[in-house]
Length: 545
Image (cartoon, rainbow, N blue to C red; front, side):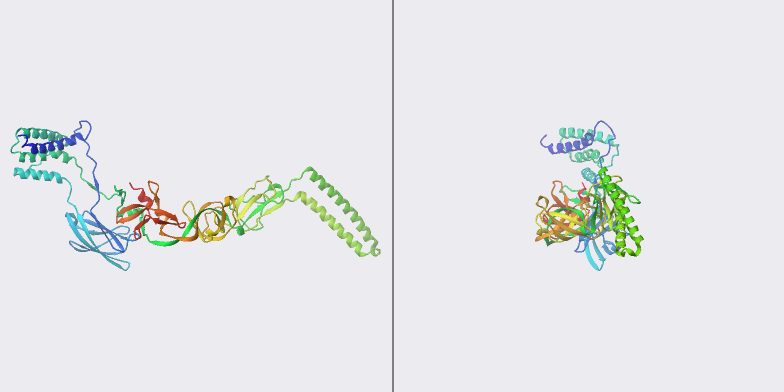
């Protein structure tokens, strides 16, 4: 008897387990347990592509949204003419600015596979894209309907749904499951209809706890490491791609460098003698002040010691004595009239004027300071002036630089290796074009200084600012040139890029790179030609979890 009823007993035990599961899934003895979290699923969608267009169709109720993007760049295609052949006939899709194309689709409410033919005309390009859009059947209570259908078939009659509160349904399921198990073990005959009915009743509480799925397109990282990003999210993140292609490029050297002034457009203001600084009318020029060649920037008054003052006074007394003697001699010669030669009178007059000039120079030494003037037109880049400060001989008081003419000084160990134009990259990502100007002999640490002139816009650059110089060298290398923003640092520290593997899927690839220039890197391993690589928005993709 027990052997014959074992399958039926197992079915009853299954019903008992299904009824007990909701009761054991929560703590305590609450009759109204909180519902489980809803499952998030994506809306029904289909995709197609050609050499020019990438298409994604998304069914939302009785409306179908059509996203059209450029296949190579992933840029949205706007102002296109879109004709759709639907099960109800041809329809023209319309789109508001910044929105996808939409068509009315009452047939989308019917589950099944619906075939569409989308004709796209944009920018002189005509593409015909077939799409198969699968609308799934509503998943809500499908299992319960199957169990109730089994019970109906077994009893050959209708089954009346039983409505109970959630807590009482769990208790009833437990009770019925236990009674079914005991009855089947004792009777073992004619159990088919009863088992079906009890199984349906016992499974009711468990199925009542299942929340309906929520339809929502949500970006997420898949178990294989790839990232699912709906087209709507791609447009918000401004994802752009580029088709990778292999080409030969010159080998580049990465050098440390810094911004320096052009030697023909910069100058120093120094004191020739040691003295005390004083400000000109209007005060000392501040940093960044425009100046012109010859403008007085400061004064230097040499200090006089006691011995210097005594010497000057002694020289002044001697000159004053000579001036007095010469004046009396000149007056006596003039009083003699024609008796004295005219040449003697003139010589005495010249001598007197010379003595007076020497006497005036001594007075100026004690009164007039030295003027420090700007050597070129430019702006004050450095200043070390303060009222009362003692300026030493040859000390730099001001540095004047023409801000429109700047150079970059890089260090290399081979002078001839970097003899060509280059680019420089600032820490913030800005790229400068450089023109080669020359290289010197080995300097500190046996490094060779190499000079480049900055081409183009130099606004925002500062003297001494550090840069990374990418200089062209001899030799060539093959690889795929990509923007620096496309290469990220993966979780393991290895450089990665994201491939646009499907319309709404992005797959990471580990790569090996070499420097190319300030804006691009060269991928030499890890990619194949023809792959679509994300060049804008890759950092945002990498943050999706």
